[in-house]
Image (cartoon, rainbow, N blue to C red):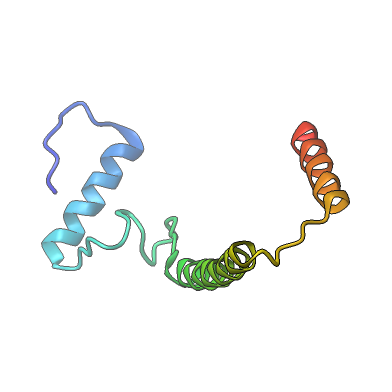
Length: 101
């Protein structure tokens, strides 16, 4: 990326100059944010956190799918017995929680 805007001043021009320096040196990496490096710039790494989050979500989804399938089987066979008191407690708790937000 080369920027030829004569109106750039201050930090914006310094950042674009640094980007140009990195590209000229062959050190530019499109997977990292520009301006980040060993010079104390800001840096964000999400790969580790995203991997952990993805695994947790996949585990939760498969666990939930198994529960839903088991409940569907119980319902279809006529064996499903709901607990009206637990259902109402859950509904009230959910309504109170959303009112507090």
